[in-house]
Length: 254
Image: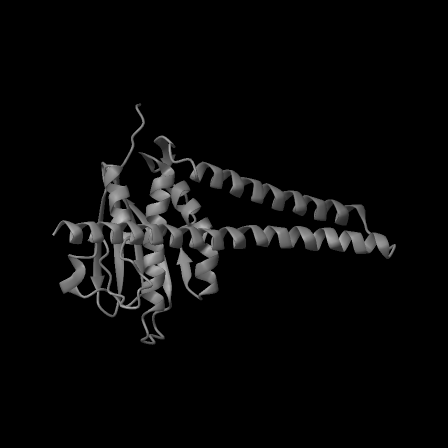
């Protein structure tokens, strides 16, 4: 009996380690794309100026100023991104009061390229209201990314063509007097009602190919509950799924 428990425990450790490695690979892919874009822009502007000098073409001061300004913008973009990665790697980051829109935008920035490359629209309202929460922002980012990846997988694995319903994930925010609700809705294949109650169980997955370990939703729910929040999911088979991420709304003392 004890040997079986030991084997199961070791297996879980290995699976958790595999899930973490998978998350690192996904993050590395997003980082590479996010940095390659501004680097390509910098190279294009610099190369154009260099060719102009070598060919002794006449280049107006305004054009030079414009291209140098764009180079500086791209460098600033990379610096901001790298600084965010540094903060993200700090596991001892404390809670802070932050606008929920800021957290969501940072979460999207990390993975937007992957959605675009798969032909999946990732929609989030451009307006930014003052909806403050007191949390560890990087933990909430991690939870949101896991929910978004779950939506991406659901859409990609749904093989039915629905020409009237585009492939998309929509993020929206709602509030009550004391809570903020982040809704993430996808147009994937949905989840059967008889297995909805199991989706937060560790290692529970409907995939039989071994690619999914069944830890994403478990970790997301654990993170959100540690932040005094709640995570619920409703789904309609063949239509899509919505995740409801609820957190306490922080109200500044008047």
